[in-house]
Image 1 (cartoon, rainbow, N blue to C red):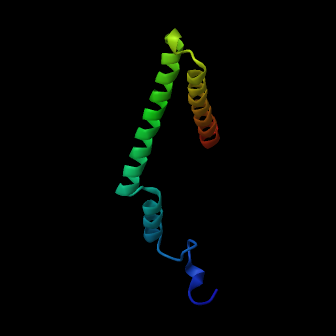
Image 2: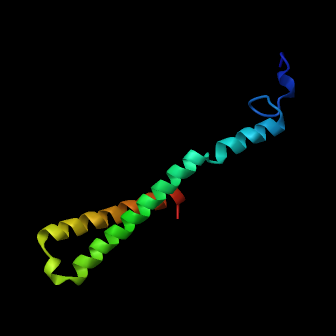
Length: 93
């Protein structure tokens, strides 16, 4: 309790305003992080739509029902399941 640590209100021993500013800077993404988040969302949505189109095209077109295309559909469905499990693990619903 010496060296002035008796008046610390938080773990960094800074004023409450500075502490809240540090928390705000940590939580709110920077413009570069927003760009990366947006890029990930775009890639994710394009991947989901592409995988859905592969499944639908093989389902609707009977001439595309070959062993190779079934394998590709299997990979697309595996990606859906991987997303589903990761989504539920992340958000717990």
